[in-house]
Length: 252
Image (cartoon, rainbow, N blue to C red; front, side, top):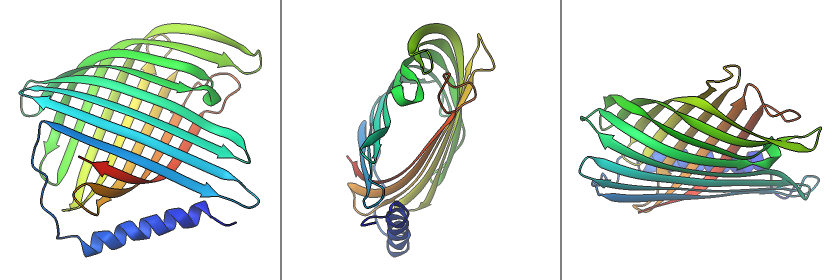
């Protein structure tokens, strides 16, 4: 192969750790500001016997004012192998938070996800709940959230070549951990557990982890892994999807 996906990821990981060693003690801490933006661009390609193209894009926009915070997240993952589409995922999440104290807050959000190749044209969720920061320091953060709401879905049945709609009450439990390894590097692990309250056998787990290293005030490199597991997948489709992305991140 002209390009090898494993070699590309190895090179990126080595570059990140090299940068980590060189710049471990460099850089100034970011000042708190009312608005922040982070956008990642990911591209992986191989050629030869296997033609594979993976494109990734995600963005996070945060606006804080007094005790309020509005956050938007959006992402796209597209992969192609031997000219055939392997993945095409669209995700959007809009959330409002209201601080009750330095550690507790209320939240409400709406989310949208589309992944036809995993059996659903769309998944919509509207939820409200609360969160708590169990530990919050300069180098370590651990928080969790719980929310209840309503979900609507439009799924596809592969064998019958038909689609069906469903609405149900749902619950979401999340945990998020951030570890600041050095002044310019950060490890993030985010676990999301979703359950259909009308059918408790239909539960889902999303696991997101990333390691990022800043190479300047506005630019960083990031390696991220995403795992999505459906205990009760849409009929005719697999239960697990995984993605490993190497990204260039722009921060403002």
